[in-house]
Length: 113
Image 1 (cartoon, rainbow, N blue to C red):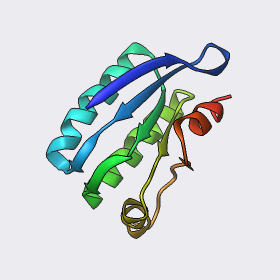
Image 2: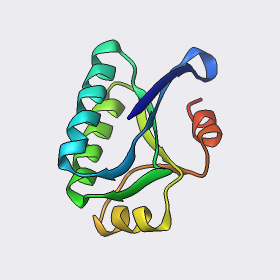
Image 3: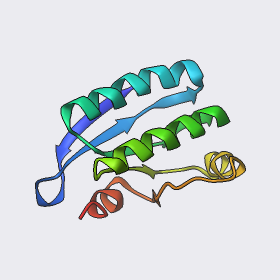
Image 4: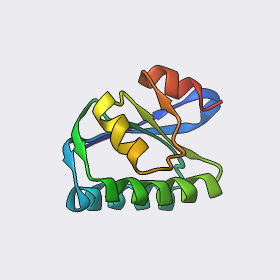
């Protein structure tokens, strides 16, 4: 998985995650390590680009929501971009998802004002 950190708007750092393939509980372990590293580094603004993700285990949605709560506690957020209709349905079937979804990285980046 590719992780890119850029200077966002108004000197805020924003990290882009670009996972690919299926995100199951095992794959989420890799994402989780990176999210923990972001918290330790004080980088609390995350954009996850799901354009290359073909499937997401519904259990991962709950884990991701828990991380979003942690990032929000530090004044940051996790935002999603390029969510396919299939992945959107998985998120919706979870019953509750607090994620802001954007059509592009640029739109999500601008939302970190």
